[in-house]
Figure 1 (cartoon, one colour):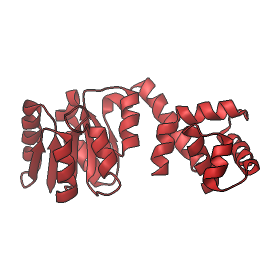
Figure 2: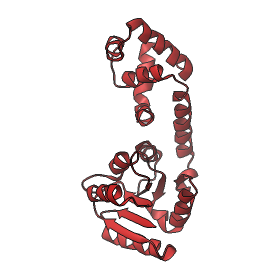
Figure 3: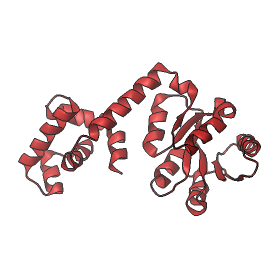
Length: 217
């Protein structure tokens, strides 16, 4: 089993390596102090698990996740001090398979890895217990579910709306009539259960752009 650790704090890296070596004595562990070298190693070495800090030089952990999640089989674990729902959402949007808060890493790391081995995702227990985080995750799941009900043409239209293109511009980009775009807008609003006004659709699309972008990948 191969692990890659990326964190710019040498003491934390050392502690993490000790934890992993104790739990998995036969594992190989490579560590880096920046995101660029970590990303290169993930793509070249194909580790089983990659543990990434968010704040580090070169590329942050979220940027590394976004770069490798679609082309690497490595399970991506975000390790961070950020204990808030917004950062959790960004991590999930970037392709992370797990999210751990550094304060609780020693207690949860092995449980997290074993969950990922079973094909499950993992979120720090402290965040799972947070009402605010639960609400944000509920919203994320609801939006994802609604987006998956859209047809390919409707989703392409919505993605362009989220980028602030006008109906005329969308029609030109998709090689369809403006009337077709308006029909798509109307159907999108109905499926998303939002007001049919153009302005409300634009607001909704911009507010949920990260989720739309994730599904578009």
